[in-house]
Image 1 (spheres, rainbow, N blue to C red):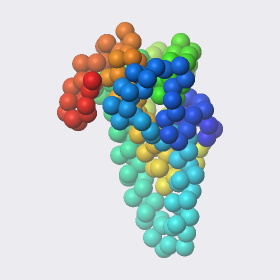
Image 2 (image 1 turned 90 degrees about the horizontal axis):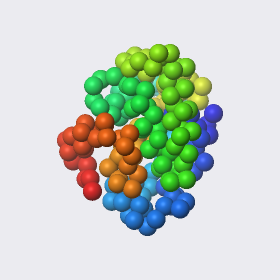
Image 3 (image 1 turned 60 degrees about the vertical axis):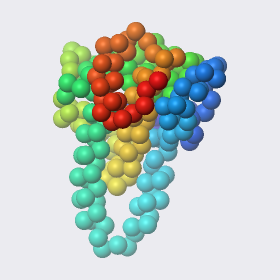
Image 4 (image 1 turned 90 degrees about the vertical axis):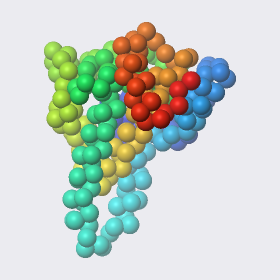
Length: 207
């Protein structure tokens, strides 16, 4: 469904990051300091992908380019997995999926986001699609699931590459929200040491 993000969050807001409902000016200022004044919503990557594919029509090199795109897609999926791995231990844990997508919900809806519903949804998704016992999963399991999602959106590897680029951009934005005091929660505490260390290594400014 093109109205949903990589893991099923409905994308009701798109294009620029719209003012967050009842969020105060201080919250919006903090988001601006984190470089989140605007970002592209993944559910609109498909149209860009189709336009890009149109530019390759009739080229003899298209098959070769699709092979290259497949390699690039794997690279992007690994980066997406890394961004979800909030504690940096090489596995995706259920609460990492939950917390990152809670921040995505805050990006879309601000303090109006129903975080209890979001968290329940992603715990259910993790158990239904990734590991029934809720155990941490490796990259291979993550890739298998996301590949199924991508195939349901568009089977073309070129289109999928552009879609995942948008997922990665959204995940980067969501990780930055962890450093925004107005959107912090007690559930973030377990991940903050690794996130702060990663931010310092990547030279991402934090308040």
